[in-house]
Image (cartoon, rainbow, N blue to C red):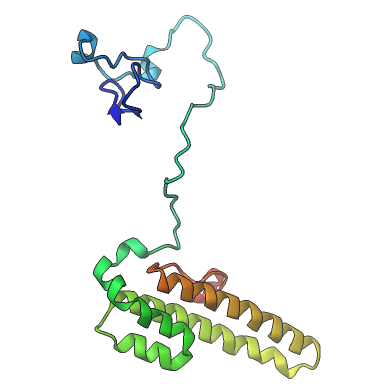
Length: 180
């Protein structure tokens, strides 16, 4: 990949001109040596009206581009810690309270502690979902539907743990009591 010496835009090696600012990328070009970055705000003519809407910038699609996910905490953990303890992190979801205790006792691992904390949130949510079951029919339906959703959330959490990802449990992490 070439980098434009004028504006810093990255482009293909075979490009002869910058797609962003138009500077020639040829090796023998004397204009590259003394090129200064272009400031579009200062280079606009002062004698005409300023357009209210600029045309959209041409960007290339990058299928490997990572998008920011505020619920993904994977980068906060050591790669070695994740590789060594992802099975124990999954135990926290699979075996309930016993799995949470086992996950907390493993080598003082921050990765397993993260997943144990998420598993505790899911266990508390399960306890809360059982309360409406005292009401016949409607309560039973609410409890069954809620527990079914919770099973799906646990499966997602187990898959994330086994893949070495530290992503907060969906749905449950949105509830104000369980945030943080």
